[in-house]
Image 1 (cartoon, rainbow, N blue to C red):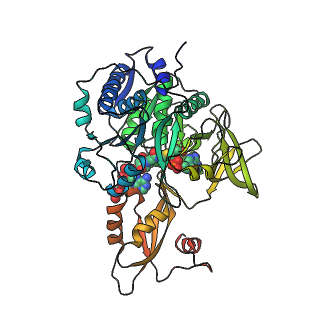
Image 2: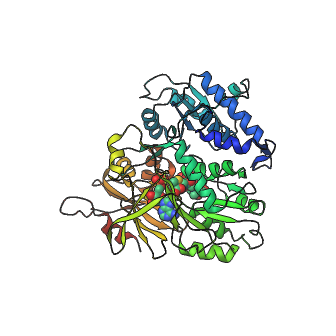
Image 3: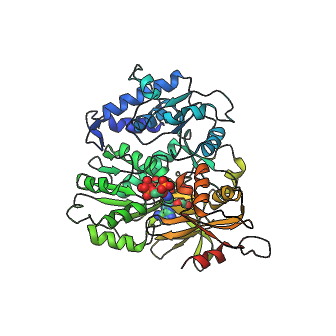
Length: 498
Ligand code: MCA
Ligand code: AMP
C-alpha cells in the first residue's frame, strides 16, 4: 500500500525536487541559495536534533534572529515531525521562561548571548539541551550539523498531527499555545495560492519576522508550495525593500511597512511595474494608506485578514474589486458568519480546515473558543456588505495592535503596577501614523513620588519586549471608576486622545 504523505514537508518536497538547482533565497548581500542548499541543510539540522533525542511530537523552542538557516531549521522540524515553537527574539528572559515552562520543549535553540541565562532559568522541569544560532548564522546548531548526513527520511504523520505551537496572548491569564496541524498549514497555503494566483514565477520580498503566522505560514509556506523564490531580508527596512522592489513580483507586510514605504518618498510607478501584488494584513490598513499607495505605485494593496488560531480567513480578490477599508471575501472552503448583531455589526465566527486544533494543554479555553456547531469565535467585530465583503470594525477585547504586533494592556499594567511608587495605572492604544496604534500608559503615583516617565519606561523595558513598552506615559491624580470599581478606560482615552 502506498504511504500517505501528510507531512507538510512532503508537499514542499514534491515542488522543490523538480529542480533542485533553482534559486530559492536571495540574501541581502546578493548571495543566492538554491533549493538543494536549503534541503540538504534541513536534513543536517534534522539529524542534529534527532541526535539529541528529539522525537516526533517533541517541541523545539526557537528564539533566534531571522538568519539564512532559519528556513532550513523550520524545514528540519517538519521533516523530523518535531513541533516548531518560534519566539520573538526581543522577549526578555522573564517572558521567555514562561514559554519554556508551558511549551515543555525537548531542545531550546537561542542566540549565544542568552545561552548562560537560559541554562539557569528557574522552572525548567528537566535539563534541556540548548543549541545556539547567532545573528551571523553561527553557533553550536550549525557547527554540530556540519558532520551530519544530508539525507533524512521525513516522518510520516497524520494530517491532524501537531506541526507548530505559536503563542497568542490572552486578555486575561497568560498567553496560550495555539496548536496548528499539518493540514491547517497545507490547506490555508493552497487556498491563498489560488486566491492570489501565486506561481513558480513569483519572487516575494520577505521582510517580515518569522516568529509569527504572517511571515512563516503565509510568506514562507506559499513560496515553498509554489516553487517561487524569496528576497530574504533579516528585517524590514524601507531603503532595502525599495531597492528590492524592481526585482520582485510580490510583497507581504503589515500596514506599517506600507506607511513607511510611502513616507520614504521613493516609490514610483516605474519602480513597481514588475510587482504583481502588494499584500497587507495583521492590522487594519488605513484608507488613506490604500489611496496614497495607489497614487504612488499604481497598485491597489490587497488586504487580507487572519489570526494565529485560524490562519487566513478572508482576502480581497485579485481580479475583482479590492475594497479599501475591507478585508475582502471569505477564502474558499472557509465559512464565516456574523453573530449577535447590533446595527449589522457583530462577532465574526469562522469554520473550516484552517481552524487550529485548540490551545496547548488548555481544554477549557479550547472549548470556550468554539461554538457548539464548530465555529471559532474570533473576538473581532465585523460587518458584511451586500456583496459579501467583510469589514473589521473593532475587537471585543482591548487588544492593541502596534506595528502588527499584539499587546494586551493587562500585561503592561501588571508590570507598571509592580513599580514602587505606582499606585495604579491603565494602559491603552492611541492612534499612531507609523505603528497604527502605540501603547500609552496613564499612571497615578503614590503621594510625594517623583517617579517620571523615563524611569517607568526603563523599568518596563527590563520586563517586557520593547514593542510592549509604552511610547508615552502620562500622570493623573486619580483614575475614574464605575460603580463596580472598574477603571473607565474609555473616559480616560477620550481625555487624552484629541
Ligand atoms: C519594534 N518596536 C516597536 C515595534 N517593533 N514598537 C511598537 N510596535 C512595534 N511593532 C520598538 C523597537 O524595539 C524600538 O524600541 C522602537 O520600537 C522603534 O523601533 P523601530 O526601529 O521603528 O522598529 P523596527 O525594528 O523598524 O520594527 C518595526 C516593525 C516590526 C518593522 C513594524 O515591528 C515588524 O516587522 N512588525 C511586523 C510584525 C508581524 O509580523 N506581525 C504579524 C503577526 P527602542 O527604541 O526602545 O529600542 S501574525 C498576525 O498578526 C496574524 C496572524 C495575521 O493576520 O497576520
Ligand atoms: P494574532 O493574535 O497575532 O493572530 O492577531 C490576530 C488579530 O489581528 C485579529 O483577531 C484581528 O483583530 C487583527 N487583524 C489581522 N488582520 C487584520 C486586518 N487586515 N484588519 C484588521 N485587523 C486585522
